[in-house]
Amino acid sequence: MIDKAAIVTGAGKGIGEALALKLGAMGIAVCCNSLTDSGAETAKRIRAAEGRAIFVGGDAAEETTAARVVAETAAAYGGIDILVNNASSCRERRKPPASTTGTKAWR
Image 1 (cartoon, rainbow, N blue to C red):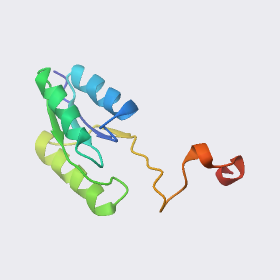
Image 2: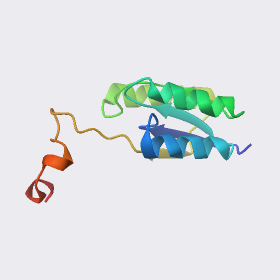
Image 3: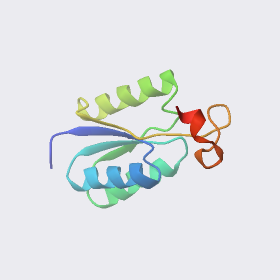
């Protein structure tokens, strides 16, 4: 066990899930954050492999959620050593999906 704690946003799928699982396998305590309950499943998988993990759901782009993720992680593990800010979204209120956006929008 490594005496470190990490927050991984977007831990419910893809790169965030893979990173959370890897950190957990390394013995690092992980706070899995995701907009949906898929992050809870990632935390469950880490615990099933004898790791330490919690799930704190919500939109990491929202200030109140970010504060709650930090507070709950620090309370559970005594501090935060690693932040993987992986969460992303292409909801309409933000930008359209990259697959339908021309290069001008990204300059």
